[in-house]
Amino acid sequence: MILNGGTEAQPFNLFVSNRNATDGTSTGVVGSSVHSSQWRAIHYDSLDGESFVACGEVSLSFFRNDEGLRAGSCIRLFHLESSSWLGFNGKARDSPGGLVTLQYSDDSDQEDSTKKALSSDSLWEVEHVSVYEGGQIKWRETITLRHLLTGRYLAVAHQQSPRATTRSGAATRLSSHICAQAIAQQQPQVFRFMPTAIADEE
Image (cartoon, rainbow, N blue to C red; front, side, top):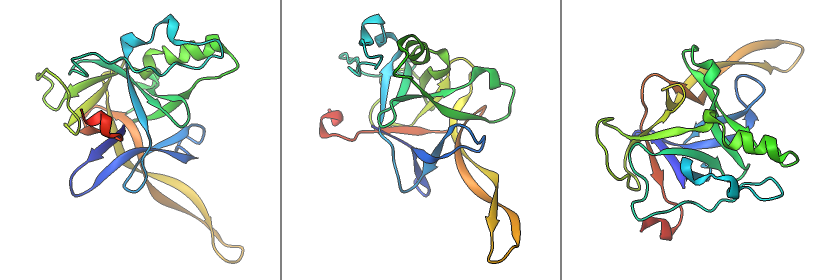
């Protein structure tokens, strides 16, 4: 599925960039109007001990029942291309807008891989736009994603990030560019689960 957000006038998709985030160390998770990344929502209770095979990779059998995804469900968002989890460091709860990053699983260490996959930093609660509304979540329905550990909401915000640019000659100046980074903030922002296969529509 694709995680779509924004408004009808300015839609975007949650995209894993090939560049670093503004912290300089983690991979950038950004809002893109052109590119999209494939995600899989995995129910929290579907990751048991049998989900991990000997090589340390997570079995991606998506837990499906007749009811589907419901408001209040706890999920993990798995990025298919990089085999990593979308997470927010719970220790950064005091910062006004902390970066949401990918948590990679190390294939060489199965125990470390299991800890990262089961970390509470990657748990998100699916909510309807009205938090008091329950029931089933349908494709393309507006939802919010609340980080379970900190209570913050997944959002994409434009932040200024310093960058050095070189002009012709020896003159170098410091400029800034606008970057739509994925963050966790106090105010909710709406997203939609968009299907990428015809079978998903059912």
